[in-house]
Length: 226
Image (cartoon, rainbow, N blue to C red; front, side, top):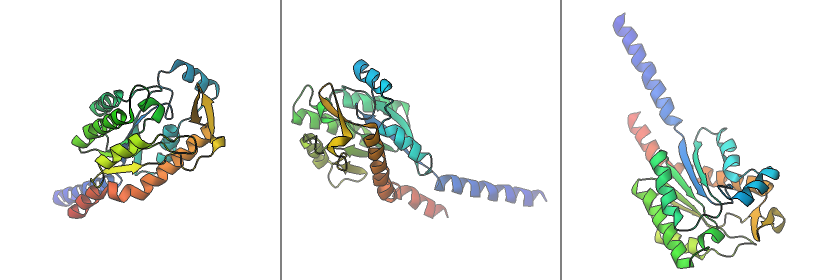
């Protein structure tokens, strides 16, 4: 009887472990600028609060709550952050959170605030390399749309990692947005609340399309254990 009971416990434990492994979520961390949140920008923060702004990471979190494959674990969003702060912000996030995928999104205005396109691309590359050394997948988001034409730094950085495993590039984050989807604050166009939801939906669709390639190693391990 005791052997039968022990066997039953072991079988149940195996099934529970296999099910938990099968449902393992892709843990996501987002490094973003004012498009992703207000950070410590006082003027933008007051405006966002008054207008009840919701940003794309929050919309993405809501979507992910209905899909066990994804979990938005951390969001580091600071308006007005400069290119050189990218590596420091990535290091700080990885020291605190155990993530599988880093979404790196800094707007052209932030990246070019105190430097050139070349220096901005170097900062992006350095930020990405920090994550890749820890075997973390990286999705680089570029800003191109009818209102944004400063995309060279993203393309230059993406070229550095072209063809490498676990690197993904979404060059046209604003591709589906129209002129009416932006508002001007401090002379800089920003996506509206409705546009933020569109960005989150588009990003989720991208993650959905690439989920298999992002989790191929997990599925191989699961096959071996079956």
